[in-house]
Image (cartoon, rainbow, N blue to C red):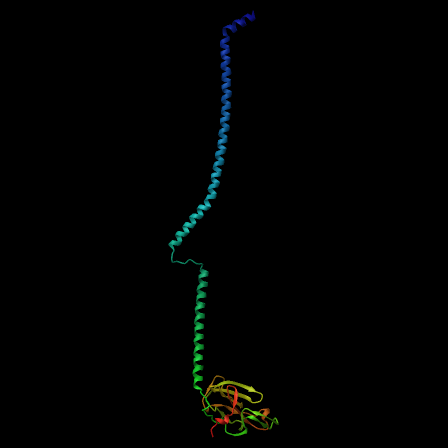
Length: 274
């Protein structure tokens, strides 16, 4: 009986039930499909979001890398513009500028000093040339006697003469003129004092350039009144006769008087007046 009712129910309502079940199944399938599609869509959206984030990060990094180059280019452009605007102006470190100014001043001072020194040398050279031109002793000139007295030992380069103190015979390149101690000694000719020195044999000795290679030497002196470089006129005071050195003790006080031409002895008697 129960089975009959069931069959009748199924026969009457079976198609509707089947259709309802189909609808439920379709709805369930649609729901599952929709959920699955939604999940897929969500995953795609998440992937898209991640890709977009990565793309933005890459763009940002690229922008950062490009920025220094762009900034450098801009700075260079600005520098060029600034340089063009500042044509004719010099921008320097103040310390470097001060140093350059100091160096320039020093160079100018050095140049001025060198110029002054050069001028001084030229002037001195000119003065020396003028003075030397004023002493023109020659073979036709004459000498004055430098001191009053007698000749103790004559000039002799052709043969030897006897020297009493040394007790030897030897050549004599000068005149040994006897004179009292303290007797004034005068220049035998105008000349320029070449040297004032002390010699073991001739004592304090003065050498004078009298021009054209001629030179006069005065020895056995004291109280010298001239110095190197002085121009002494003919007859000008040179000094005084001193005590004789040990080489002339026997001869006594005297003036050692020698004339040379280019360093070679010349007989003074050939130029001395009466």
